[in-house]
Image 1 (tube, helix red, strand yellow):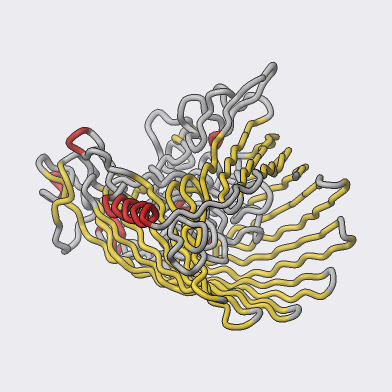
Image 2 (cartoon, helix red, strand yellow):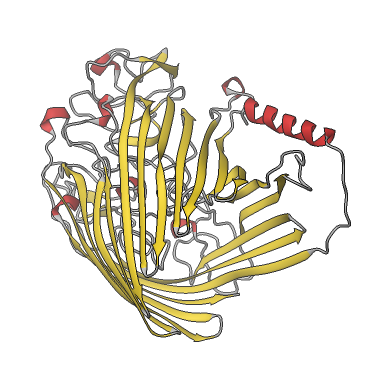
Length: 591
């Protein structure tokens, strides 16, 4: 943990000790338990979860699973402690790994089922429980608080907790779980200050003792203004610092994009003329700033929710494509980058690692509007996320023009799709194992950005029966070089028609270019059009049946040059993307 945070804690504690103690009779404790249990079944065709290759439609699956979430909240007056635990399991053994030992977020690790879900077979009597939240919330300022001399009311939350109240819209900046602090202070009526500090990595005693992590963190500041009834405006500033490797977790602050891995690059890279995946050295630094405004307006049946963010800063990568940029030392040699014969001391050379610096310059604009009349709700969405052109090879240190959230948890455009975003089955997404190609992650498609134009309708036939429908057109902000590899070939990997296939085979580097610099050309920006139909039926108190069908008419921007046969080398033939189908049914019990 950073020294500055430790000093801040010490000052707060000292001020609290110096304040005169005033004790009242403790209120009676209160304990509440709430949560849900989902029984889910999903059938899908060409979701490309395992092979991340939408141009071959041989992958299909039908499975059943369950998820339970139980939240226990203990309150004494204004102080509360929250404990949230979760349980996930497949019906039946699907991976040959242990139900009891499965580890979340480790699809290839020992004891993990698909997406980290545990396997459940006969006589299964125990398994894992995931502790998701465990935090304490208490008054920070105002009467009966840690700092009672501060005349405004505020709270502080410490522990493992969700990103909350930093933005109105899900997935545009931060959504998920983190360990750290969150504070909210009501400065005056209609004006609230919020602050979040998330610790991603801690260097502990440093690299000399074998700890390769840096003090990586993100912090978010916002003011919530309500100038008049119906309008809420939230100016936001976020800062992310990352040194070397970052524990991104699922859908974290880095996704592999444009041939740049989301983690450390090891081993000597290929020659400069052929490129290859670039990555981060142990001493590579990243400083990312995001500023903008999130707002919502309500007036009678109308609603408008605009969001605009600008992102700037810089990061350092170990390149695999040469350019005229000057390089700098970014830590002790550990392999990776350009081989010695391809660029001298650029990277992967005995001595020190060498890095290129990349500027960050990106935009996100998202506006949603709605109208409601009785049981009918109609909504529209338009978003633009900037991106890089095909010729801007990120592996050579070119500036980054695609937007990166601190943590999306893949919920961008939530309930605006079942294939390219999440509605019911939150563990099924197109290209799930290559986060740089997930449209709801990042968000955006590889380095090329994203444009969405969609409409959504909901109609309550009765108070207990809801119909829903979505249509969404998806494009990239810049044309995609479809000669890239979404999966690639890995030695010793499973084969399809003699060509090696493996999930995340290109190292999680997004769409890996096979052409370098000016040779790379964009060909298309139409990703496709998705439509959904579904219903929600509350057939008894606290229990409902939910069903959804989704189809994606795939566009040419989803084409790739993966290998489909032993005689078909990667990058030699561009294959056409195939359509995608998914249907999900959920029985959900809430309490």
